[in-house]
Image (cartoon, rainbow, N blue to C red; front, side, top):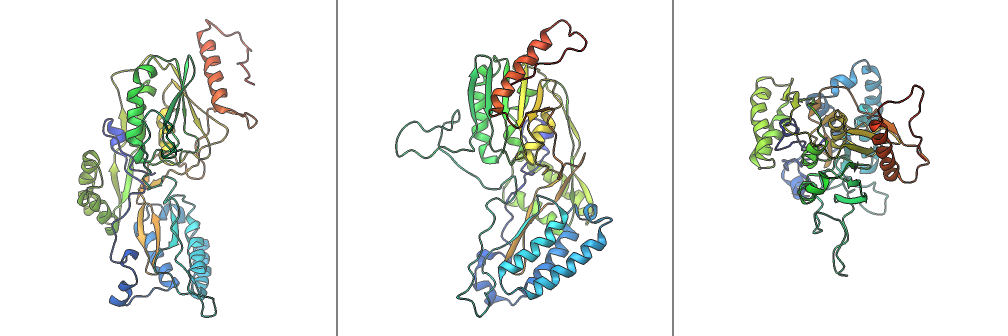
Length: 424
């Protein structure tokens, strides 16, 4: 999740942390370029990368013991096969393929890579020329660490008119009116860079949101980012206490140093800094163990707003990581109904991914924390109300469903055997 997953208002949201915060460049950073190779001799072979990955996973990955238990023999067989492929690899393509096969054993969408950085492994002698370094994945994880920017208005992604104006940002949050009784809030991304736009959008339309009966929150395709991005939305959904599971961190030395670097480099807000400062002594006192990073918490707010009275949260298989945190929180409200044609992505259980530099100028991302509670990886969250596959406009479907639910709730009684409205 990713991530950060904090909030500066509600305690539980404050205590979630970022996924995808870039790690500081280490001594093996590819930014050092070819010159680094002339300074110190090191083993940059594919086998050395496999050995380094194995050590890293055993030492730093909180899901290692859980995912290997009972599967030790298959992992050993896979390791032998990958080692043979790594030893025979003549270029970075073959090497990366072999290493990724080993990483896929863990079935964790927050484990990303490895990918080739720079400089690349030389190509075979009979090739036309040296292989160019492969680009890193376009997103470090489903909750990308990228920070898109846009000069568009907080209330709309649309460009005013000028031909020279920047193209609309498709990931920017928008709010529109579907009809007199329904507003639609579209949140394509929870990347932390969209938090200011989301906060501004909700604040600018606060009076409208609090005077409109129905709200549709559309997070289809939202790969996550930071739970702090939906912080301003949470009070509108609130109808009672919200329980949030805490998280544990594997207190390996590299993980401890990584979290400390957030403080040293000013990468986090003061509230997140407090969480890290409180956790570091526990990590240092219990090296190699899973220790509490954030506690289980319950959010209680002073106000339950009468409007919106009913909210549809639209999801799909692209809702991942911090987006799934939003679903877990929102579905605890009697106001909210989770709707969609399929379960969410199931990218949730391990997060706060750290960039790892491998000896052969290859890199990967490995989670450092484990969320408590039910396991969602590979399973996802099933919608409470399914939307048929042949529905062309899920937003319109959700609007009609909210209206039908409101009419049914307003009825003094429902005769036995009566069916709810079947929507076209």
